[in-house]
Image 1 (cartoon, rainbow, N blue to C red):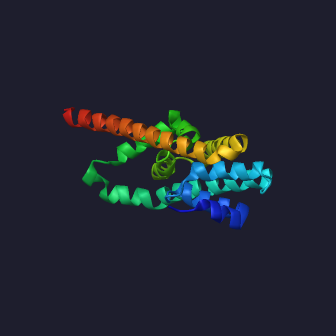
Image 2: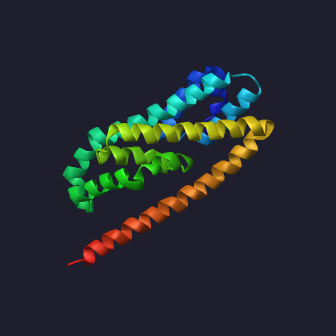
Image 3: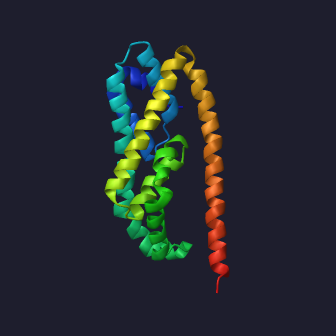
Length: 198
């Protein structure tokens, strides 16, 4: 397992920034335990709270922005050329875009709290060419709420940060599995209804 504690202790706020940037982008880094541990270091006065909050926020914001631009630059071309093999057509991409303009933008605020969701929502938003200004507004607001929540958990639970992080990590994995299963069933039912339609 990657020992992020040593990395944060050695590199401080720069380490927090880099790890969260890579983790939010999609690399297998335990983001929530990392934030909780950072909050614990604030409690111990080993790291300054303002700089940790800024490093955490900007790391998350940069990571999700990279995902968005990857989807915007590469994803749309791939889907338009090869999407028809898996039933993805331009009109479906337009529907996703309209969904983001409706209620889908709230996924960026709440999706941070579900591993697996935050890693793909920005790519999907980029693929659908969702406008960058509302993307930044909701994605960065979600990042601020997310990092603040878990830094506070690490600070207030202090010496028990590792037990709390483990419990939260396990429950978030279960939650992400439930969300992924629900979304899969939803799109599968939509696909089957579309196939049956005349």
